[in-house]
Amino acid sequence: MAVTVYIPAPFRRLTNNRSYVEGHGQTVAELLDDLKARYPALGDMLQGEGGDLPSHISIYVNNQEIHSLQGEATPLKDGDEVAVIPVIAGGQDLTSEQMLRYSRQIMIPDVGVAGQRKLLDARVLVVGAGGLGSPAAVYLAAAGVGTLGIVDSDELDLSNLQRQILHHTPDVGRPKVESAQETIARYNPDVRVIPYRERLDAANALEIVGQYDVVVGAVDNFDTRYLLNDASYLAGKPYVDGGVFLFEGQVTVFIPGQGCYRCLFPAPPPAEVVPKPSQVGLLGTLPGVIGVIEAFEALKLILGLGESLAGRLLIFDALAMEFRQVRTRRDPQCPLCGDAPTIRELGEYKALSSSPLAGRDEG
Amino acid sequence: MAMLAIEQRYIDEMIAHARQEAPLECCGVLGGRDGRVLKLFRATNAERSRYRYNIDSQELFRINRECEENGWQFLGIYHSHPDSEAYPSPTDVGLAFWPESLYFIVSLRDAGNPEVRAFRIRDGEITEEEIEIVRR
Amino acid sequence: MSVTVRIPTALRKITADQDRVSADGGSLSECIDALETSYPGLKERLCDESGEIRRFVNVYVNGEDVRFLQGLVTPLKDGDEVSIVPAVAGGGWA
Image (cartoon, rainbow over all chains, first blue to last red; front, side, top):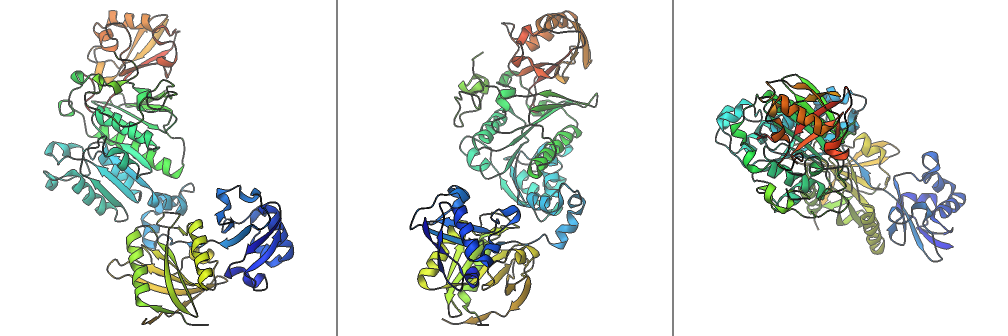
């Protein structure tokens, strides 16, 4: 097939200053071989490691970049126009202050500067700026997660300060997202906090969740738990789930397609048997532990490190100071992520146990 | 080599673009001929990163095509350094595949005082060029 | 078959604060009945009126949810570990 090849300015000195040359080949790969034979200097530019096309060269067939076609196997016909254009790319490096600030994690071989950049580029949503959300947000910020969304509609109460380390005594009465933002700024000015002083609900959840890479659930009620689970799954986001009660904590990770909170617990306890959080005591160290584990799992997901808790529920017994695990699975009958899902959009989450969304079968 | 004549409005536009995209890096192309910038093309940073920019490949094709049709060259390529200085990083140098273009870098390191500087990057060597501001 | 049963925080008042107890039973339902005998009131927390395990409580045998095994008739052998794990969300479950 005889095609015309467009040569951009940077390569013209290699083709006798011609902007257009003729080429032959049934596929892009064959055309490239043809070009390499006729213009060896150009050929050198098109030769990457292992003989593959270098990643900094884009090839277009009739206006379309070949990655959206069949790559180098893209077929050519007579009269096609192929363009070979180097990318326009680059980027700043970490500042020397950042290199020092994050030096203790950059020095970990599996993290390095590349990992630190991933963290700084990452967007994590923390739903709840309370007992679980506080330690989670603090450690995510300290590690340099570049964008932290924080969702909480409440004002700070004095009794919160027993455990909610994102806030301080002078903040009592203020919206929690405000004190959260200030605390995080003092820990790490690299972090951009996006505050959501609202409750997550069916109207806003998908839009909010959709803007983040990882969702960290730090809520104290089942309604929001199921809503967040559903929104994360529908938006395709990994969801780190944590909960505490008295002296016990649970934490796991849900990757869309590998199970969700509904697979684990198809229905919450009936509203009438669930005491309000203010009626159940706990030592601050309990959500402290679980919140930090949630942050850890979020960091591992961003950095691609270790084994995530996906597929396992970690159970923490603080009195015995024991961790154990049980296996979690995707339930093929799950109404959200099973084989025949019935939940395709967010619905009502009040008094879940009596709503049609409570589970597959009504009990 | 030919000096690049650029109007203040293009400098202002690069800064505006950088601020709009911050904390992510912005990028774009300055098209023109005979050493004179005639159009600023804002481009989409396909990396959507604070630490990398890469002009979306389809946009690059369109910008290139429009310049070709108008008889323009890529007189300049600009991108921002939201946090660091207006100087080519080792990454910038390693990925400078358009040696005929002047590389403009907008630094937002000092938020109230953005800085724009221009560099020729050729064979791994950086040469700063003075930016000549001209009236229309 | 003698198995170890891990008791969640929420139920320890019923088991005199023990976080693990022993029970006998060839199947999970026999084990639950045995637990009820030793710790009256436990079964009613675990199971509803029809005798099925409540949907906000999971029971695991050796780390596997019995919903994916044989439910209440999941067989047990000596040394197995049964875990009772309720859903928790701050408020928990009275």
